[in-house]
Amino acid sequence: MLEVVVSLKFYLPVGEKVLVETVRLAGFEEKVRPLEASLNTPFGKVRIGAPIIQIAQCESASIEYHGERNMLILRGKRDSVIGCIEKLVESLEKLGYNLDDAIDYIEIFVPPQPLRFKNFIESLRQNIRLVNPIELEGEVLNVWSVSLSNATNPIGKNFYNWFFVQLNPDIYAKDVANIHLIKRTKRVSDCIEFLAKLDALIRGIITNLGGGGDEE
Image 1 (tube, helix red, strand yellow):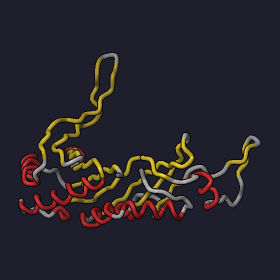
Image 2: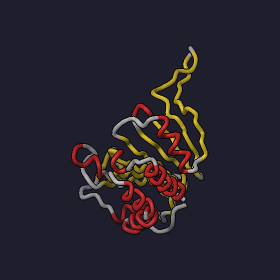
Image 3: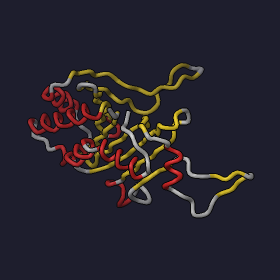
Image 4: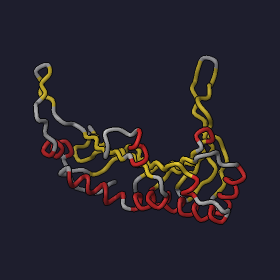
């Protein structure tokens, strides 16, 4: 099952009381604790950036809030994250809030993780060919990994619908590739729909690149 991170970027800060009541109504396990990044120095530990607060646990998913960025973050197995988002929508509705109206955008992030992809490099080189071969220091260079996107850059008018996929080989296993994915949207329903069909989308990418097999 794929691990995903879904970040909901709110227009304005979410009050602590609203967060606590949302968690309670959703039936999540409350776990309020700071998740701070720190750096060891000769003078002791130095905190880096604003703290991210873990506010709850929902099945296998962790729910965190980054106050400085007005961002609610869900991390965990894909199916658990979908269920948590649906419960969040319901609990916020009970409090009189519409999640779509409150958020600027949603970012879906699939951190690098292994997938079965038979003969990844060979398949890639058969399907993606360089028009002009590159030779450096007497060596011919060829395609080794691939990055795909729906636009030329993730800024300006492309920011809210940015879709990026990257596949890299596992140097120790020829039939394994590591996938990394980013997808942005503005609507909760679109986020849930995308997560639900993520397996099929990834299989389609693998098939189009000449591979086969299911994700691990």
